[in-house]
Image (tube, rainbow, N blue to C red; front, side):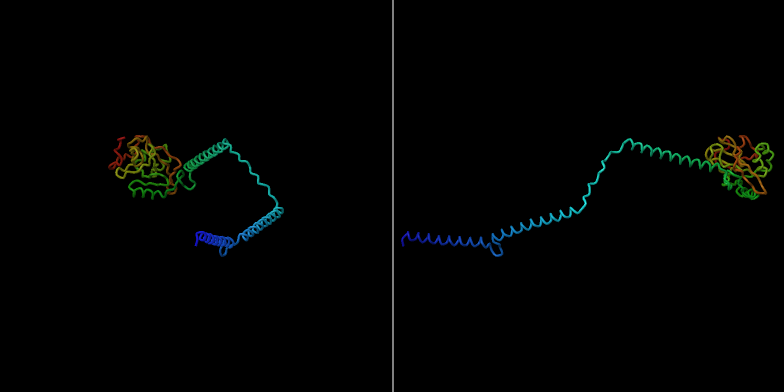
Length: 283
């Protein structure tokens, strides 16, 4: 076989193979595999979907237009313009509040003080301090004084009550005759002494050993009937008037009588034991 024949056969084989490849590729492009749509089919579907979309949009537009024509159109709300507050007005409000608060607090304080002062000075209608106070039968009061070793404290009258010796009445008349209500009690055998020390107002207790009154604040000392024995006090203990009505002892706490001057000693009583505060006459 000649070379020309071989070349001719090779060209024929290649031509057949090329035709087979072209036919196979054309079949694949038309079919696209199992379940795939052809190009013409997909193009037709897209055209139908586009027309359907345009139709639905037109229907919605028409429906919206029909609803809008039947609804009332509300005007937009009016928004008030914001205006900054006046700083002077705010300051005036604060000042007014503080002024009212100050006046209210001061008024309340003054009112409370006035009420307390009136209550303190008012003579109680029911026998409180500042009025005449019935403390019981005088014989019972003297018995209580003796059982308490010479001193009896009556808180309702703010008083110490002690027994005045009968044998000293003549001296008492000279020293206390000008204070009729005080001497009347002494004549009945009783002295009612205000609990406050005449020096600076401390409450004066009794001293059971010396049988005197001895002030713990500054050491003023008084005998059992309130006459000064030592210390810085300017006078003896102040006292109340005492009266006896049908055997009942009454202390008039509405009037305070000043104590006797320094040097008054109607009973002659000296300390009967150790002093509780200092020594007599040491101040």
